[in-house]
Image (cartoon, rainbow, N blue to C red; front, side, top):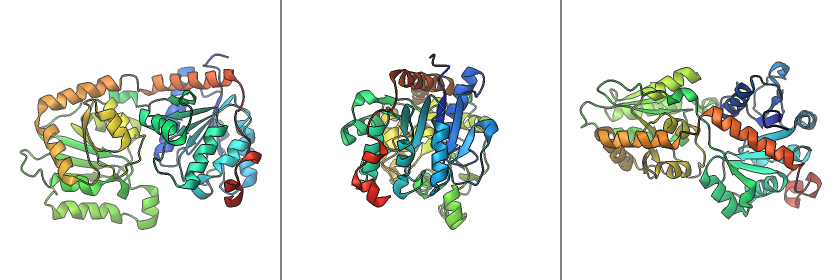
Length: 394
């Protein structure tokens, strides 16, 4: 079987669900389909929380939480493919910590790869048990950073030979020339807006840069995260606006809550001088926004979440401690005022991301799945031999 012939059933959230996992899977599947010239042999079991039914024309099927018949049907669909790719993130699947993913895994009979979008450094015992069990039952484990691979190997005792590092892809449109213009430098943060993004610290950092002439612009682009909007509406966004106003930053901080399609987002990112990622998390081993910023050749100022430390240490940007507005301000000041440093970071970013665009990532992923299919069927324990932890909780 050639790599272009292997069929792949993906398990993930999927548009119109709005989240990074859905966007990633749509982009990866789309890259593979474009390389083949069609979507034949590619399908999705959508574990999102929407109410959309089966869309047979696009090969999209729904897995309904808590519905054993739906899970059985999903497994039947997936077992018609040569291989299965499960995109894993805690909270995506039903059950405590999303443990129902194990029931789905136990019903699969074809070679299966699990992509970990999060690899916790300090998981709860239940979270650790889920990862351990997925690692036992999967044929391949996939992460998008060296940090993620190291954590799986050293923290979870997984054989490094079973782990593939496949970088997060980036839109090819980001690879065009910079569109930055004007006297005022544009600093950009984009993505779904919520408290974990550290935007309070970012705005406070700009409060220390009021002496710069001309004043930079800080654009926060993207809609409020659906879960945040459901629980508290737009109160968080309004609090950010009030913070900026209180610091005298009305002429600096801007908000754009529109939805950006891939073309308009690529144009926006290419228009920035600097990308800022002030995330609060210390656990993030994968950031699609970071990958896209680097692919666009933009200097990045970020907090020290693991993926940023890994990718920026070589010179593509600067990092600062989480929640440290002063350190963020100092990093921004250097990048905004030192043209040579900014250009040097941009060159390093483009060098780093040369092989990250989706066509390349799609072909690499397909090759990995083809090799897995050629190697044979499922390995590891079956569902009926799982530890008591899951029988008791489930």
